[in-house]
Length: 469
Image 1: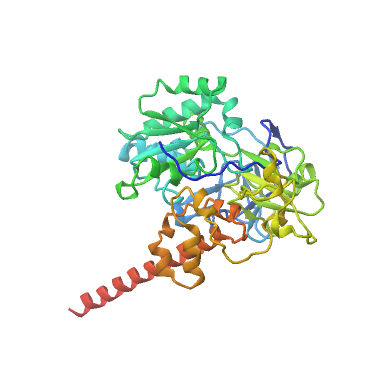
Image 2: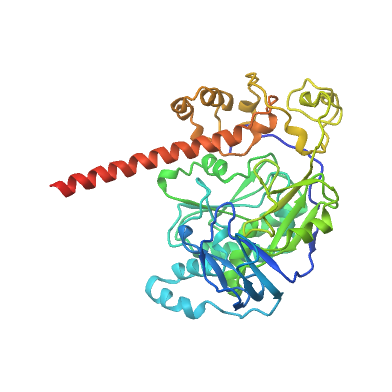
């Protein structure tokens, strides 16, 4: 499989391979919003006692995906805006088979495969599924043309797949078997690092016995773990139907839901960046208080916390009190409070740059200490073409930017802004510090909304004509 573009980013604060359990909190703060989900349908009452695994809320726009209670406790709907708070949280033994009675009629009417898919939804495992082309949650009653399973986490500083796999390889292979049971003849593509190591060889040997699983050796270069990039390189066209995609934690969740019939309540979350000591992985649950994490790991007095990786994550505001249901990692960057002399040129010995014209280019590659001041001040595009060099989607970001600067949305559409995978590499290497990723995300949304409005207007006019006949 041929890849293009990409860039190997070296930054200080890469999470180590250990998983450190965090102490059980007395109160959990579950945000009602995450990158993909908005849990608007509250399923509990203020003051109600719930058990671990009970649904607290649902996102009806996303097939009713539930927000599950990570622990038993008492619900507080009034103490924190846009959160469901769980007080007096305690860890209790889970019932062995909470969903079987509810699912039995589905199995009789629709078959075992549909029952298993509904079970994944009810037990919180379906939220780990993605549509590889859109990033949205796929229909749990649908059928894909293929499934992509990616064991890599190449963006700094998200959860590493090898950390989750190393002690749970049996669970992972068992999860793959369950995944096969949801399919008829469709293939499963397993993306693993293109390296030689004892652990990588163990994985390859385990997978050889699965006829429908095809191994993809992927270079350790960002963003070759991107689902959209993998789907395009595999020739899986969107017009042929959905492509389901999961990461390592998704397969482990499938195993837990279908082997043990237990809800998926625990997460392995990375915490990395220049403001953390030690950069590591932590074992927590959704709603875990951010305050407890900061007190234990963040040493910078003034720091910015990003939900996700350095390139695609979003800054967490002060109003966010706990980890959301989709959190894969926290990135902590020191805030640069003052201006640095000639900082916009990034000429320093300790700073790297994609352009080989700064002092640091005389060094061998090194891990840079990244802070919030690295973006610098925005300037006009200089047409250096660095963004085009690293773009994995094969588009020309600098050209699209020029169209948008002149307000030519049609030109940006003709230049295939729709192919942008929002990896953020163009913004990272840009010497003019232009936030291209955000520009392209906003214009894609604008184009989508305009097309949607046109379709709705056509449908309305057609309905008027039919009514007038």
